[in-house]
Length: 279
Image 1 (cartoon, one colour):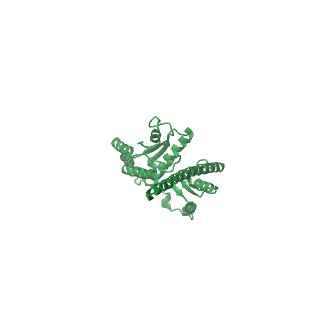
Image 2: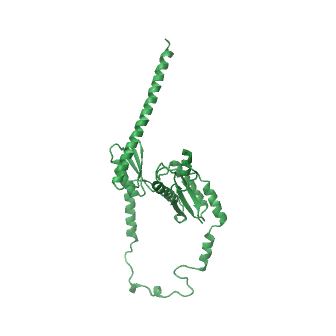
Image 3: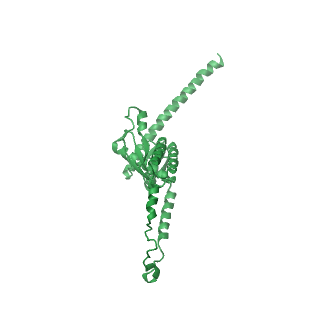
């Protein structure tokens, strides 16, 4: 018997065992993730943290909450569950650590302390000039002038500027999120950066960020998810330097589908964030 005739069955057996082990490991991992997800959601609900999303990758958990405080609290709850190896906290602006949250609190306290005046002058100490009425030739304290009306008119975008901005915004690819959460994917963050660049190129317009979901799940859940995703994009744009006063956000849930869903591809099309120039 040749060596080749002996080796071929042995190699086939090894490959078959490897495939079988891979399938078993995948099934076991999915079962672990499903079980831990149920435990985590139950624990969060018992702790009054119903607005927190949990995503398990093996035994490692990512928790996303509307506030940094809730994110840290949720990570502590989920991280203490049997079977969970790690729990990472994500707030509205991304990853959150306990040290960063503490530093932020200290900074705000210091800011309030520094804003408190050491002493206020008494009425007797006020200079006579401060009590004299302004003359007719001097500008009023409210800073109003005839030129302000002209400036506001210059800041108002023209129809051509609005249309140009809308055309550029429509060309932006769809922003993607982690399933059933307002956490941006890596590609989603890149698209938001593209949107920020477009908005910087059109500083004269104001934009409403509109969130939409597919029809999977309840209407209430989808409405809340669409609002959180639109708010997340707004916060990211502000973080990237876009003026907050130019932006608003609104969620439409599943109420305004792009297409009638018949396939999984249709559902994906309906999950989207759109930019609408409002002025």
